[in-house]
Amino acid sequence: MVDVGLRTSPFALTDNARVVLEKRYLLRDRRGEVIETPEDMLARVASAIAEAEPEAERAAWAQRYYDAMAARRFLPNSPTLMNAGTGRGTLAACFVLPVDDTLESIMATATAAAMVQKFGGGTGFSFSRLRGVGESIATTHGVACGPVSVLQHYDDVSRLVTQGGKRDGANMGILRVDHPDVRDFVHAKDDGVTALRFNISIAVTDDFMAAADEGRPFGLRDPRDGAPRGEIDARALLDEIVQSAWRTGDPGLIFLDTINRTNPTPALGEIEATNPCGEVPLLPWEACTLGSLNLAAFWDGDRRDLDWGALAETVRLAVRFLDGVVEVNEFPVPEITAAVRGNRKIGLGVMGFADLLIAARLPYASEGALGLARRIAQFIGREADEASAALGEERGPFPNWATSIYAGGPCYRNATRTCIAPTGTIAIIAGASSGIEPLFSLAHVRRMGDGTLLPEVSEAFRAEAEAGGYASADLLDDLAHGVLLSDCDEVTEDVRARFATAHEIEASWHVRMQAAFQQHTDLAVSKTVNLPNEATPADILATYMLAHRLGCKGVTVYRDGSRALQVLAHAASEACPDCAQPIETLEGCATCPACGYAKCEGGEV
Picture (cartoon, rainbow, N blue to C red):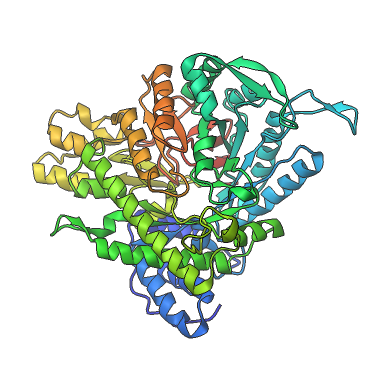
């Protein structure tokens, strides 16, 4: 890496952000002592990514990258912050690896997954090509173990590997709804101890959803040759999926046909799997680099509007940054390198949306919030497309462009440009709310993997309460112990609406918000539909049907209290250190249903 001599302006951080950076991001010497400041980290990252630029221009681009990050307007995904400029690890967060119906493929993919997670990435797998359990194997005269057993094997591999030495393995396991073993897969995590490092999803088709809605049979098929393997009652199967999701939060649904309708390179094959949080559908061996804009940082309080010009400028800078990450990145296996360089997928998303709505005095559950979401997503999508097209003219389009859906149209440098990620720890660093989620709580304790407790209170609500004359210690203490604002008599209805937290927002508003962003997003949208404990299976079924009808690419629900031995994310309790959602603890291990974070034996493995 070339020292480009950056002007390192201060990186304003909350106390919690500094703790997170010191524990997980800042470089250490061999004795484990921190040897860089947050400003040093940003300079390291900016300089490393500027290596993609012509030598004479590197200093100028590195400075622009640094300034955008230091102003907390844009941050790349965690592996880039952790690894850029160090000569080790990957800079991409999301990978999909193939699993073919041979022992050689199964074991080779296990090895590749271990290397990806060692380098700092999360992995997604489709098990849909594997023959069903008990099917004969001609070469050994034995029988197949089936997708669930392979899922369990990969979970064991993940348990042994820490992501980049800093994060535990996170995985997504997917099975097509027409696979003969689909019922076993639906119930694979019902016991609360199987595959703790995996989120699982069922890849459903339009035909299945229609069959379930109409109450008609749905055909299963042999994954090897497509031959019919009997029929199931589609509605009964969907009800089983709903029941498991109601009990445990797994499985989610992936809407396979919706995803493939916007597959930019269908000539290369169908998309079968996603990354661990579901927002990055990818072809086998692909990886995607993500980054997020902090929307709240663009709010102009005097004008009561976003600074759209500044947002446009930062979008264009971020696209160039992320394309630079693709250029300078290194990967653990050559197949990934070839797939990534062939399509150059990037995913620019947002965080701080809930903060923005609060500043704009818009309730999350409102038509005004939906309208602003669509406007923002469309604006970012358009600016990102134009930036990528300009890069395509400057440096050439992605190599597979000629056989893509864009052939004859814009010469995009990147096959995808936008994606909405959950932004777990980078939102903490930015001092922003996560992704497009509403606030999970107005006061809670965030527990890091090593047991460190980080008390968090919504400063916007504290200011609102002080202005209204009801900012008592008792109120904040009640909120920290799980009391909902809707139950606080001293708070006006207007304030209750604007500061409504995840479990106070009706499920349909969660889905409609996801759909509003999805309408103008290339990849997919990470979103958890949080449900109160008293939610019924019928509520989950309605959520699934609405998400499919509105064009979401997947849907994940989490009913409060549905995980075994779950400890709620309030005072003296356990919350995911990445995204603050409640996590389950069982037999020494804990996992987050929202973002896939996992830890075992009281610390990160």
